Image 1 (cartoon, helix red, strand yellow):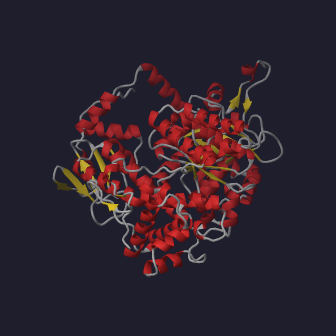
Image 2: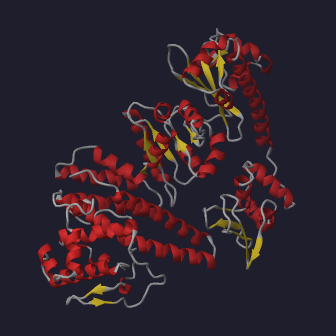
Image 3: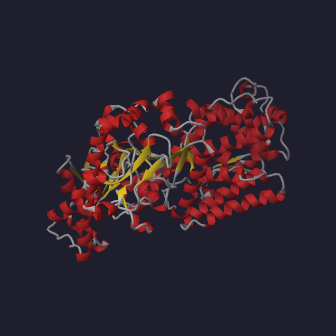
Length: 626
């Protein structure tokens, strides 16, 4: 059947979203919209909004967002076509009929599904029978629980050329060959032999489609021999480049966790599921393909790829990264978790528990970082030619990106990192600076503070007087006294800061004024400006080597590193109020006019706020002694 975009739009238009959702949860009128307590997360105050006019719902608390069809698939858990059929019936619309050729293919597929299910039942029976002792011992050795064995449908194929063929003879050889269960010698030119079982002497693992139907098998050899794993060939039901193992179970699990994890193989998926990570999938004996990446993006915007720490695993990770580059679009990316050398997920969770794997995921590396680090490690960077080659490699990454905005941001980040590495320019930062510079305050040449011309739409908050942000501010001011050349380098950002602590605000004002009055500024000169009062004592206290744990507050530190760390700290502390102000403005705009553009802007800013929080946390981590 062919569901055109026009037909789907008509279906959405005929569906009153508030009525549909009201069948499952209590909704109440709120102006032109409806509100309810969000069904996707626990809350007491309604933050879930339904807009019938625009045809979508949105939760300001957890970010859940979608239309009528998505409500049926996400909240009701229906497959897409079942959701469409139910909505169409309620809207008195006929679902477009399939053409004859499509109907014939569907009938053929139905027969093959019956064959595959019969084979699955037979393999399970064989594993539980007299011949399956070796398979049962293997699973016991791997620590598989009985409930896991049942849930994932483990079976066994006896070491025989014809047992399966005889057991399923009612289906006929042609259908068994088409299903990939038998090998047809005639296909290889050997007309003297009969067809025979493809899987022999192997632990059998069923591969299912998103609806949970068996479409193929993976077989692991139990004794010596090659290949270690054998997959079904491509069939009318199974395309290994488009299929992800465990997708049927991982999809509902990912809706609960908000993430999906791609690992290298079946047994990795199963071991992690047994350890509590049900949102795992795996490619099927090949590198992650473009189709599989797109399928992951239908589940979450930034899936986690978790590969082994050996050379083969890291090669697979960078291959997936490169394949994703032409597909990148706003909001959709990849991140990478790397297992310890010599360990697979099963080893890790058995040795260190589920918390160790959770910690590994928390340290995932972004796609831009993975590309940058791979480019850096590809060759030495000692000569001008080698450094130019690095820049060329980075350009090759961005050249294949098809989305203009994504390509521009990657190019900017790579350029800033390259220049910071080799030309001592400002280090990389993804935090946008406010473009309305006329609205910033500044210090004039006489050292006098000038107020901003006009306040922004949403005024930035002050740097807090307590907590981690205040501690970072103390470190920044101490660092500026120790490295006063960084004041002019960050004059605009520092001038724009609003500081809640009066003493710290006065210290910053003195630093800015001193830097503007003098051509070259030294620590002692800045201290002299403070006189002998309370500010002087505060500054001297900050300059004590044991006062704070940052590299830029220590007496004995690598100066280049300390300056880089101080630059980063200034950008982080300046960005926090800016992001909060932008997010507040975006949230206010959404409240006035909830549309896709305002929703996407708010989501971007929420991601930016989370990234900023991580940068702040990273800066507050104690450094090893330099």
